[in-house]
Image 1 (cartoon, rainbow, N blue to C red):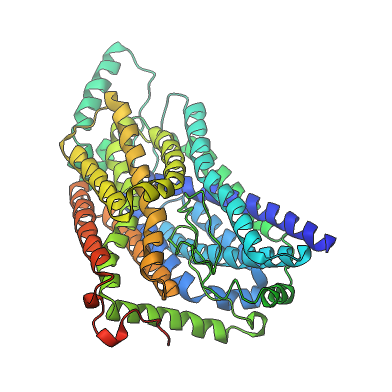
Image 2 (cartoon, rainbow, N blue to C red):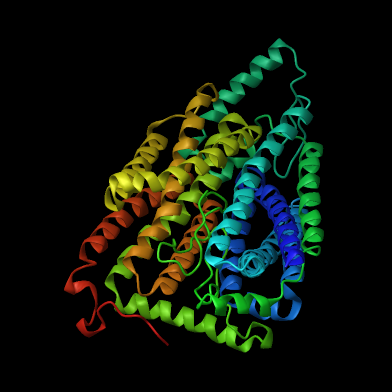
Length: 530
């Protein structure tokens, strides 16, 4: 028993560190893509999330049964490393395939991490001869707190490297041009005049056709960028090595714990916990708990780990396909599920717009790419706070009012971005808008799953899968459009989906107790089974 306790503690510490390193390297690099690689970077992110979505739904059970958890996690980290390495030479034929591979790795990483944490908590509870639910919450909370910390740490590292190594000079990065600060007064005056002219093309006036000219603003040097990428690549490779040091958890012992407690905590669809994007929640719920929040995308997709996990992958594939089919049945039988999807789609659109379009057309264009790191630090910090406080706000305001205020805040952001002419002297406004974006995302990311959980009490697994799918589609849609549609078009789409989504959500929330909720009265409040 003592050996099991020490192994679990050691493995939990290694997993915390490895996931922290992964989130540190990828989270910050994701926020740089629109400013660094422009349309190629955002298109790559769209492909990444599509690959992530598909992989998470179908492949993890097949891979885990053959490679075991620790080897699967190590392989997933190597997929991240390929994407980071592709940023050293960010051409479409290198970055796009690498993004697809990264999406494949992300699906494996987060799904396998959830399975491993569930096994870890079951083994730990067995060693202490106690109920597993307590330790499931405990392990998830600690581990994903490190994931949240990684998002902020990546942005801090980026800012430090940009500020210390820029040396007041720049050279071409991607499609940018060489600019130096070692100039006389006349040259400096000319540069300031040119800078003011460039700022007129920032904001919703920004176009992808003149992105090369806009990038004439002072930016980072190639050597500085390579230092940053090297740090992130090292972290990713180190995480891959750390995963191999994890202990093999005895699944049979975990199963014994489940049986002694009268339930299988992994039988319920393992939860995707709000991070992550990403990333950003401070609370983690246990699987198979009546108060459990249904999944959201950024941590992981989930799947059912059956009692025959070690016997093969057929049962898992069947379980996953059944979950997808039953989710479609939910949409076809429950009007509320159909009414909720646009509001859920807006969760992904909100994140992608703030990470891609806003960073490129407003922050990087007006202030320079080095400010992206500063805003990302504020974004991650605010996101963590708002995710934590959203539960308290929900108790005070209720679901409808809380989402209504969030929608009003999103509309305020959209109107501000439409009428405001961004200037480098208005740095405080950039940071304020960043904080507002993070506040909105923190609320919807953590409380949309909560609303699904309470509304679809008998079909939580299907509702959770629906949250994952729609949020993933929102991310892919907005990241994809960011590279081809001008910021004005993306802003209008964000505004429209926010308003329409809340209106439909409100209507669905009202009719959830009415007879008209279901397409067929006999199907009222069904527990979908296939």
